[in-house]
Length: 264
Image (tube, rainbow, N blue to C red; front, side, top):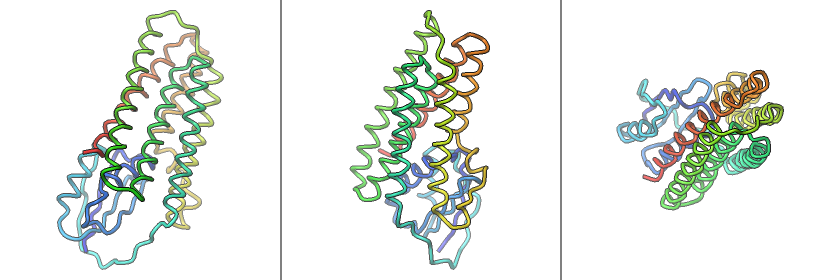
């Protein structure tokens, strides 16, 4: 058996892990996948050549690069029997915060919160497709991925149009306190999701390093919205909120294209 280590520079949170798992689903030569999110490393135990696996990893555009390949005598791997339960947990958390953020974003007139709600929805799509992949067929998974990807792109485009309308219009300032409070709780929710999925892998990781939380793009987005809320209040301008909203909508579209790659 061979052991190949990849560096995945854009693997920031469990949703990227699930994207990779789904992309590699169905490659019969793979025996086991071992993810190290904090260090952005993926170790693949496989039989035969690495060519097909490497091509699939690179196609996701997550900055995948092969570091090394060597033979290994390891044959025993820990199987996570609670995979479905864990995926359901993080799916519920992400979808709940999608509802919370899009509702409070509309009420408070914050495009940052609306955009982040779509990012939460995107993660929910990934976990949902992962659940289908656990017990469903490859064809069904690809159909759901295609629908989810296009729907995500449509929502992001609508968001971009609304940002432009507000930029050139005369809108009231977004409620900065709502932006800060909701984003703070979303920050905690993202940390909990990362904790749930990482701590399940071994007892040694239950105490999870702080770096596991702060390597996540989702957390950076939350901190960006909190900063935008402070600037909205300080500058008496909606521009910081519109800027962070535009950035996040861009990330949502980028994520949508990654999901679409699963449908090919």
